Length: 520
Image 1 (cartoon, one colour):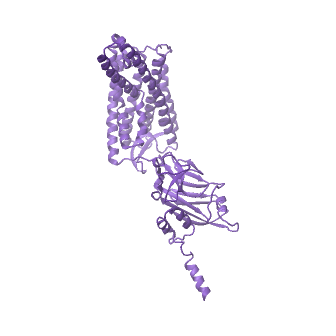
Image 2: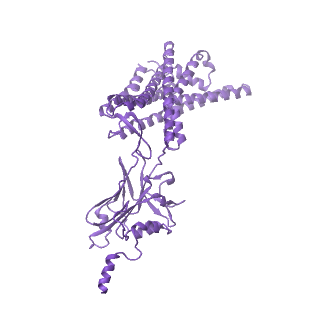
Image 3: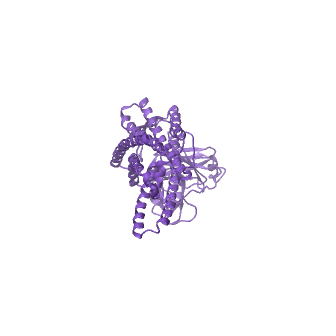
């Protein structure tokens, strides 16, 4: 009779007192000081009340085979057989228990200070998907595995970047830190693969993704369309002014400025046409592919001519008039227009262009479309990164150095002007200083727009909503700023012939930039 009772109890109550249900372990352990250690101790022996728990996997597997399990649509684990064999404890055991669970990242509280290796300033990062993956194999801790365990985190937002695989280090007081020791990160197209040589609580830290609400997105769209329209109009006016000035003067700087203005005009016209025409065009329409080609070509041309402006400025400021380049403008034109045509033409042959879906940052719902690089193109992100991220960064770095040379030139001219003006009256010197400061600032701002440096504000879009507004306003109005620079040069050209001997630092640089006679 006792034997029958014992067998009945063993069947109905297979777990010993204190092991608990898997559904309740996290809730029970959160009441302890070190809840992560409590969780690791209890999760290996828990039992499930239901057959299926969202984000939870409990398997009894053969230790001689690799195990792969999906916890959710965004989480997967791959355990090599070597890790399973090491966790058996006894060579006689053929099966090993594997337990994995997805936990909300809000339960992991960062310590104020911690020792040892950790990511720099982890508070600046966020956990991908706000989820942490806990893995437990067998009943013994696993460290220094010969074959790493792979934890796969699929990206909700395919454009998220700079992900790093980390694991949780408990400090014993309910808090801890994220560490990268023993984990290697592989950044795939749609997933992060974490290869770690131990078990713990794993996550992927990414840069915070700044999202805007629908109202802000609509406002930014209106700002962009209005700014691009104004830039297109004023770029056309600037082009007309340069053509009129070129009829009376033959400076090479005029030709370079005119080419850059023409590229900017094409860029803003291409953006407006691609934005407003996309709704009436089919997915495979040759018109949309043509507009995408034109917009990409215009962007590359604007960046290339901005780099040419920096090169021309270098010749004017460093080499001054000691240069002779045969067919100078023709060679610059071959670079300024030829390089974008080659790149855009290769992309067109490759089939890059088409409709591009603008996605909201926190989900993959389409927020708009534009004729650009097709979202369906497999290597879309690679082409976009090389042509619209890497290349602009190189141009901005080079032109930033050129602007630094301009500032240095101003400072040297300012020093010589101070030495010359030391014999004048104090009141006249003060007034001249104020005037020179304003003119120098205007020169630097004007050259910044000509060199395309406002594009460098792109990094501010990842900081705050205000940064997005600043970037949108300045870049959509770049054609207007170039027009103001054109007007300043046109007005200055009328008085340069009689005032060269009286030029201040900024006036000399404007004069040099505008009236250089670099020979062909």
